[in-house]
Length: 407
Ligand SMILES: [Zn+2]
Picture 1 (cartoon, rainbow, N blue to C red):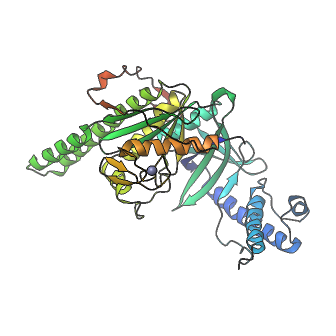
Picture 2 (cartoon, protein in one colour; picture 1 turned 90 degrees about the horizontal axis):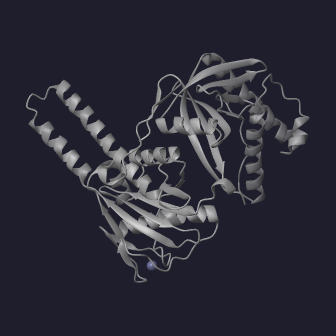
Picture 3 (cartoon, rainbow, N blue to C red; picture 1 turned 45 degrees about the horizontal axis):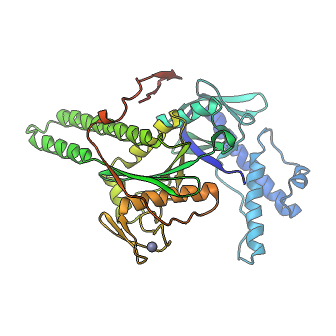
């Protein structure tokens, strides 16, 4: 089976004609409801049969029919399994619009978007989003990724466009080394697996800088007698920038380390959809709150993207408790991982190994059995100078004010 890397890029959309987009979402709802009706009357989800049903709409988008089919299909499926379920109800509210690339929407080189509403009637819009998402979109427009469907939605009066991009693992880039990365409060653990699932190398990059930085700023804050709001604001901004710079450094070192391996793919934990209200266990909660976790991860991904290293995101559940040797559940005490099968190892290395294994399993569709772990290397953070000097900053200006930094 052909495996794909898929990413959803989230942008805010500033349309030139919001009323027309509202109309589109209402119209999509009407078409959806008509197709629900059609499925019910004809008692089928067959595309050809539905084609004959007279649906009233001026829209050129056929995606509402597909949505209705999916809804009815899953209803049929549940009924077949004998589950108590009722036929999908018609929607009352305007619906999100799913669009095919080049059919329903187009992204231009300057990152403007054109959405087709009726034949020859378009809405144009500007996008707003993170550096990382823009960098992906830029690379997709350059042909490094395929651009797929997009979903147009409205939340709190604002429009959003979620664009799906993907990359097939064809012969041009078949990953040969799978590198799991586990980001922690004062270290990054990295484990590399080769094509057969053998552990090639593990490293723990230790740093205490972040802790010191935070501490330093807390001290300064205490010493500021005046408690002037403007002063605290300035301090806050300096702290933010310092932490940001520090994250740049970490991500650069990590990606440089990764590039020593042949055809690497970086495997990171997927934080999308994680919400603060949900309890993810002590360790994950601590990591999410104490360190600029998402920032380090997205910087690693950003840097990797420009260096043509692929990045995959995997489910983070149980990566710190699963035993990579026997598959059982181990115990984690501070820095030590212990399993009843006898394995004792550095807990962060185990986590990074589990992350790498998850990426490997997804892409290779078989689970390697790990038998032996090589000795662990600790790389102590000395200064940024210990790694190759960064490439000089290249700034590319695209669209209105999008600045890409390469570091
Ligand atoms: Zn075990």
